[in-house]
Amino acid sequence: MRTKILALLLLGTIIASANTDLFETPTLFKKKILSSSDDAEENVATGKVNLYSSDLELPTDHNQKQLVGLRFKNIRIPQGVHITKAYIQFISDEVSTTDNYVNIKIYGEASDNVKKFKSSKYNISSRNKTQASVIWKLEPWRRVREKKQTPNLKKIIQETIDTESWESGKSMGFIITYLNGNGKSTAKSFNGNKTLAPKLYIWYVPSDINRFVRDDEKDIVIDNFQGVMWQDNEDVSTIKKHWINNKNYTICENNTSSPACYDTSGDTATTYCSNLNLGGYTDWKLPTKEELLSLPESDPYANNNYSFIYGDRGIFWPKDDLGGYFINVITAFTLDSNLESKGSMNHIRCIKELY
Image 1 (cartoon, helix red, strand yellow):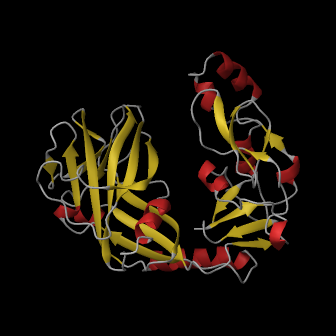
Image 2 (tube, rainbow, N blue to C red):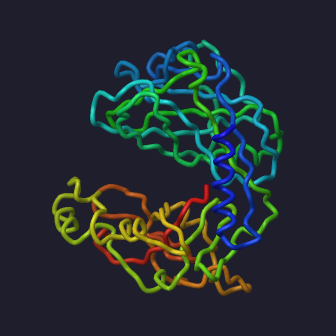
Image 3 (cartoon, rainbow, N blue to C red):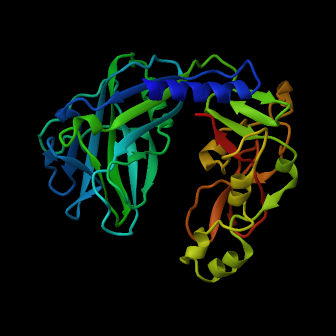
């Protein structure tokens, strides 16, 4: 209870300091795995399903690729709301034995009321998956009993609750698959420790609210649908940075597999956001490509939309890294996406999470 009160007080402080009556306080819903038949593993090669594992290997077990299925019951999210943020929290069960990373892909189960898992072969892989998915790059886990959160799963959950047959109180499921890499991470399961089983967090707001609200005093724009604030000061129009610094750019140009291609230290867009102090706020970061593409698809001055004032024709860096020499950049408001070298000079619009 104390933790919940402190979290609500912190959220209230952020909302109050945003200096706007139009910020929509989100509703938070939480649900944990509640039974052995709600988390399961499936061997990709044999189709064998295990409902009683003491842990969840993501995404290999004894060098065998596997799927992980999760089911959360009684999801009390009404149809028609807007999901602003969501993630699954795992608790680490083992220390990673290598320095390798692994990419996994998370889908929702395309069902308006997910059934419990069974031990019959291919019971996870035979289920329909959502169109929406999220990639999670798992770095080595160095401690046990640490909280590990997936990237934002809001688009998966939004697809699920937007179906005509969705009703509050139904079950929701997720399917986790191997994508690439040689690492492995191991999380607590229901059978391993029911109090530390995976837990789903969902924040949502009504869909009939103003999405963008500008705070003219602080030069920020509140985004009620994303649960973030956007930088919107003169820097957005005037400052340009590299994605990697000149030294790393020279190395990467000659060797696209070099670690220099991923090193964003120095005078770069990433560092600019990390050091930004705007409107009394710190902890800014580069937005993802998806977040940039969620901005208005028209001139910000059209239709009396004055939420965004700066950067109406700029080309902006996302934080997403394709690997190697190039990266997808986004042209503001036309939302064109083009490949450019990481040594190019482009604009920056930083983003900060509100909760």
